[in-house]
Each structure stands twice: as structure tokens, then as C-alpha cells.
Length: 177
Image 1 (cartoon, rainbow, N blue to C red):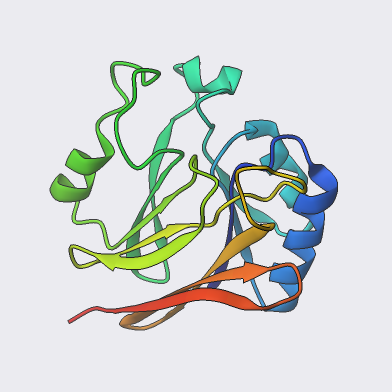
Image 2: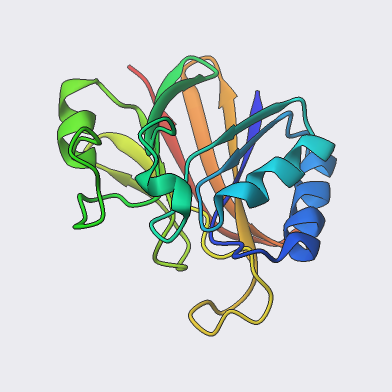
């Protein structure tokens, strides 16, 4: 399975669309949007029938109790936590839960988060942590437009950070024992 991961598009649907097209060309069938802006994730339905979204801190939906701010999903047999932030914030609602506690209590294999606008793909405490960076052109906090890809194959999950030209900027692999 190949999943594409996007974050911090901040209403730049043109750039998000270009990243989704690039991810689709790599074979991504699942599209994940990690917020800011939540509704941007709806645009991904043009590229995949399997779209999962969580809101970012500055989205109205982040304060809507009907919209989960954190989700646990399965990506190719890997328990994956989706959250805009990798830590608890003052903006969190009472029932959101602390991502660090969720990771410990729910046996999470992969953490997907955004918020910082800086990409990262690392193995941390036995899990794959991936922040796809910013999917907004001209973002002053990000060096370039980036997105993530998660490749799963049985007991292996590889996270890659990609730019729009298809260049791999970071890559790491988690092997389940």
C-alpha cells in the first residue's frame, strides 16, 4: 500500500493538487491531510476515493466536538496516529488526548503530524514519525513545498519526504519484528 500525506496547505489548493498528482503518479491510493486547512482535504477526493483528514489548530473544525482532532487508522497493517501536532497544545479540547500518551497506550507504529511546516522522517522510540512539511507555495517557514509518502509491505513501512519534482528529501524505514 502507498499512502500520501499532506499538511499545512493553508488554502493553496493549486499546490495541494500538484502534490496529490505527483503522489498518485507514485502509486498512492490513500490520501491523508493533517490540517490547516481542514477543508483543503476535501480537494483530495479528486485524486482518491480513500481520503482521511484531521483539522489543524487554526481550523474551526478543531473546536468542533463532532470532528476528531486525532485518529488512529491502519496503513498496511501498521497502527497509525494522525494528529496535526505531535504534542498536546493549549488549543486541544478536553477529550482530545495527549498524542504522546496515545502513542504509549495504543501501540502506535507510525505517527503522522504536521504543524511545524518542517519536514521530517525519522525512527523515534521504535516508531516511524513523519511530518510532511508544508504543502503551500511561498511558505516562509518552509524551504520548499513537500509532502510525504508511506510505503508498506508486510512488516516494513518506509516514509519518504518528496518535493514536487519527485526528489526524495528524507527517507527512513521501520521494520516490525
